[in-house]
Image (cartoon, rainbow, N blue to C red; front, top):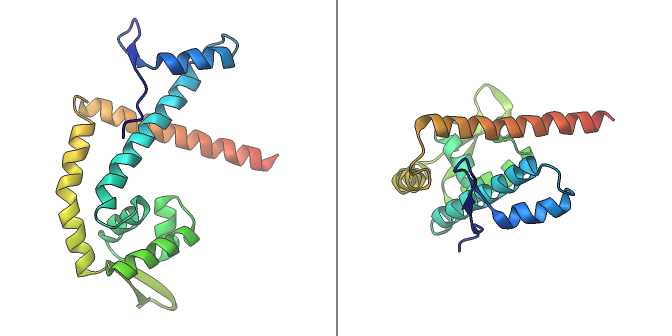
Length: 178
């Protein structure tokens, strides 16, 4: 399934969507549509990445969220609160993902040796094997997706996307303070 709109190139040879630009011009009453077009492009790129990840993990029985947790567990055990913080999601969400990974035999909950009241989550040998089998196809897919990008461009893309997330976080806190 391909949800990428028809694209064109502007005078600076940069891609844009004529359909999005036209729709937004009417919406913004002919003001600059740059920020809104960029937001639409980010959504299109995010959908493309989600489709790729869903395709890659779906045939292997894991959701993208469960995959994120499993990858984090691959670097060492952690508690649910720390997993949630590192993934930027709620502890409740991570608890459900850990439940899924436990049912699949990819993760297990164990007592925290430093705190009897706490539980750690760690990857199992089956979880490690699953990650190893997933690693190469995933790397090949990312190489294809970012084909033609320079290292500087991928670093800039990462930076810009994280700036968007950071700005959204600041905006959300500002709106909560009102």
